[in-house]
Length: 143
Image 1 (cartoon, helix red, strand yellow):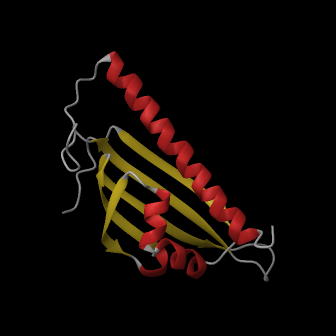
Image 2: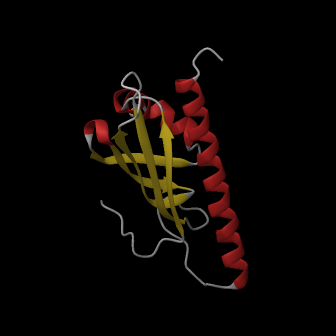
Image 3: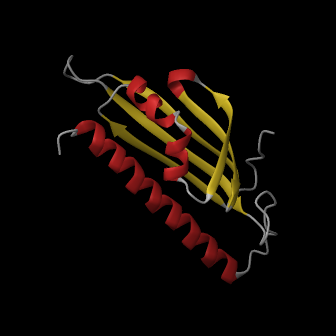
């Protein structure tokens, strides 16, 4: 199943540069235990394996939709360093109460817009903490 991206209440795109190779990053990202630690309220199923360029997942659980991490190798001034842009995408809707796979009905009420804003903000902050921790662990392994 490839999700529909046309009507996502949660639509997050983030880019972070990490001074590490795509090979180092994909080795971490490919581990299912990493996904569970990063997104404990979500269940991910790979639907697109792009090798060292990243993974695409269907998402169920607290949200239903899709997610992707795309790794883009970039040139840096020093020939001794390598860097990768980690592109992160999450396109999903909250699930109905009692369901892990059915999106909740969109009412577009003021209350719902506030709830969605808070939910999106929570996921953005959680992702930034996650990717910055990954960045710190790879760029400063002795700290």
